[in-house]
Length: 403
Image (cartoon, rainbow, N blue to C red):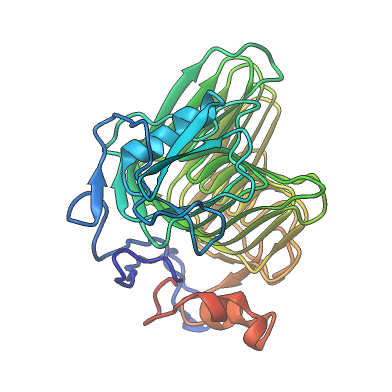
């Protein structure tokens, strides 16, 4: 995959997924992914956040953010916190452009491009997401440029104003008709943990909620979430959504939400009094999710429907070309991949679904087709064949390790 840290390729380590032999003596597929090389959290290319924010984004590139090649550059945790603060209060951003103030109304960032110029270590300090509740959303474009935001913890226990209120947790809260790409997030051990007494919590490592409209598209691409923490959403009086990348991907029109070329290694847990949806990639994905894999435990708890899946707990649209390597998936309506699969999805034979082993040969089924260490690369690249296959185009396979 093209995500890297300081231009150093990630390498994988692996452990066996099954105690039982695979057919024809095939070795079982592995589970855990551990990125190596330089990490955020130290060095000249990392800013370590102290919990403060600023009153201006220095924007060393001097651009207006009017194109992807001329983004507004964010170089510190304080500048990122400033973006969150102003968006959440519907204020204005002061951006320095060649030493002169340039003001941007954050209630509409459509067509505005931002990019990271450094790794940022959030240092385990409690983070308020960029777009934290109903009516607060990011609709610009954010490019991590291969940098990592590490030390992310977002733990909030919220008393909501009503059952229809949405609250969000993650690096971003709500992304609507916006783009997040080329970004790595490493969770602090405290992880992401959102509890809302009466409202609806959405928790995700990259974004709590991803939504598009009839005339717009929301995209998360080339992103990953790793670390020691988990992603949790709890709703004592409602429904809860938790996913490794996003809690929910909710389209306003066909193909208005796209989640592509992402992976996660963190656990996810949703607990709701009405319903719960948890997934390795998305708690609920009602549009498109392709070329993604996850390895963390997935659990849907509470009352009512408890949907859980290695890729998505509840799905729709195009769910294709995904790989589920989760050790445990628990709930009442649950599958190794997702409850709706389009095509070309695979899963490990070690994955337990409510403590039971599932075997399957159909890559278009909810449980995906079985795959093993010696076959998984060929399986993933089989359909679509050739240059149109995203596994072959955007991912790097080395020595039998995870891409």
